[in-house]
Image 1 (cartoon, rainbow, N blue to C red):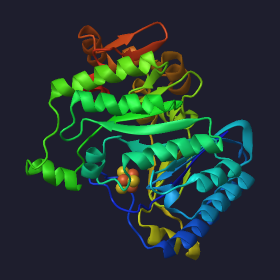
Image 2 (cartoon, rainbow, N blue to C red; image 1 turned 90 degrees about the vertical axis):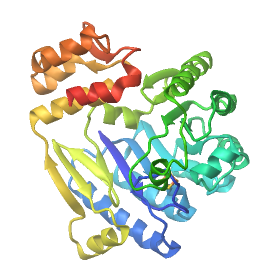
Image 3 (tube, helix red, strand yellow; image 1 turned 135 degrees about the vertical axis):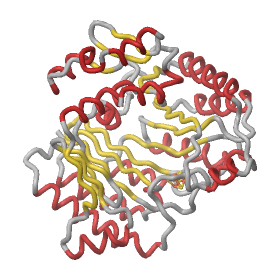
Image 4 (cartoon, rainbow, N blue to C red; image 1 turned 135 degrees about the horizontal axis):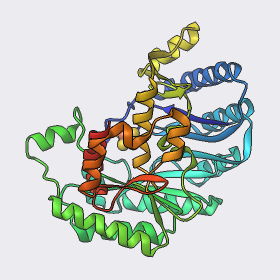
Length: 375
Ligand code: SF4
């Protein structure tokens, strides 16, 4: 079965913290870009025997900057080329400020059954500092609009650890999000990426981020409120009501195979990872000339793939299934890592059960450090 990612690399405006592959382009690129995507999808389908679609994720950028007819046409082509299984998960990302009820209804009719909304905060001051195009009223509107048209699986993206954010203000944002009764929350701590305006501002001390203790208090609020509201943390940044975990992303964390189309999109099939050219204009030109859009190709060794499975699997609350590692790679995790792993176990950052290796509650806030030890 197929997991497929389609990248839409356009945004209305670049947010101040964002290092994703997206840019602000004139609207005239949208139709040729979608035509190129359709061609890449058709070429991809022609090479595959197994085309049964288990999950489709249309992400960006801001996919919802595309005119509705282009989005629905793209989804239609995709589902014709990759016939969906009955329980298929089809996610589209959208930003408040770019969609209305009619747009959302068209997406639902086209087959999208999971909307992921980039809310980030319900505090207008924070949204302004982040450089988002929407305000809290638009965020409330878009969530309600998605529910009105009949979406039964909604994810809200939220961010914490923002400039000037207190634990109380963060709690108010999270409470507001939970009051809207989504099925899924993706909650990210702000990270400062080089090359962004925020990086410059932090370097100049013109923005000051919350202290470590405040971040830990915010983490505590997340754990408590999400648990009280019936959510289960199933990944470092992801919380879901039972049965609403994101199938598409779980496949990434389990280091499964995935197909991808679009500028800068990355696929991984049969141990080969391929990255497509990032510039959307170059992407269109190459497709139109019949030239490969793949710019980088990496053939992963068994050991590299094994280590990736460990690192990615540790992101999941349940951890890495040991038998799966043996079945896939014929490698035993204890023997492979030896003293490094024992040291992490001794300081109680990870624990080894009969079936899994996983982060402990103490290890979760230090996940990046633990993963760096095992990479
Ligand atoms: S909307 Fe998303 S992808 Fe676009 S600039 Fe903002 S954070 Fe980046």
